[in-house]
Length: 112
Image (cartoon, rainbow, N blue to C red):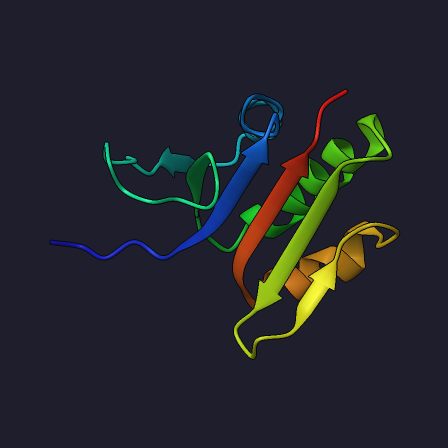
């Protein structure tokens, strides 16, 4: 069985739908992680973005578009060396560089 490298996006509150829409609009391939009934989950869901050489620009665009809609939205990236980076205020090139070393991403839309 082939192992596919993925970067998980943990979605909180009302971020699931907007993140999926943006991933689809930017042609970023992903799979939705199944949440098992009775399992304790901190987030409301997880989306595994499938890593390939050309997806970093598109994923950076998804993050920028997600953040632009509402000032209350947050994207937090944890890198493989355990650094925590808040994506607000970063441009596409900065995000691409950070995303290449991402271990996981958290998307939060508190809704209003």
